[in-house]
Image (cartoon, rainbow, N blue to C red; front, side, top):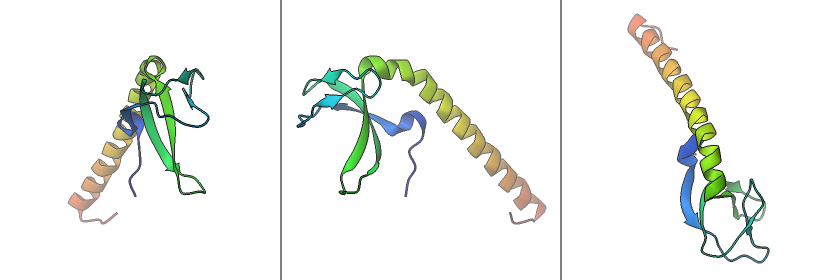
Length: 95
């Protein structure tokens, strides 16, 4: 299983025609079918359908700096863990 982290979890898409409409997650504006948006895949619901967070481009540009910061923190933690593992391997200790 792969984990979605930070900005890499979003991809460009177009609003879909749905029975109840497509709404921006942040500003709650209804997006018309075919409008550009950024979508984040979440997980499957109990019915086996994929769930998404969808943001209009205006809101996405607002949350972009926050998501970049989250991804940078996550990468920093990952680098520290790998450095710790490497130090253990150099000393002959399996972590």
